[in-house]
Image 1 (cartoon, rainbow, N blue to C red):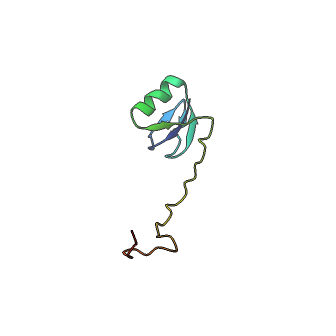
Image 2: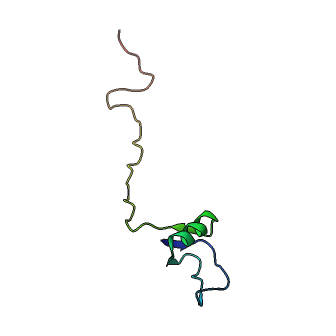
Image 3: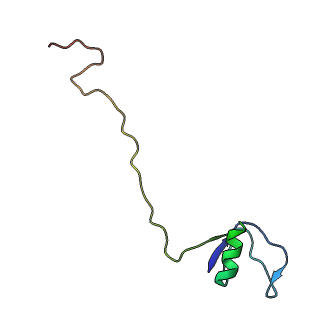
Length: 74
């Protein structure tokens, strides 16, 4: 399981220093799940999430021929 570290853990794991905060590391599934469940890491997926674009809200203006508050014939 690939995870991104949310905190710096002191000490070593298998003789190596733990990765720094923000670094990614591949761990056995059970160990990665435990770190994520405790809030020390977040899971990463192999497939990137698609980016989504949103259009800005269009300004709401009266149409050219109308004026707000203008008198209308009935």
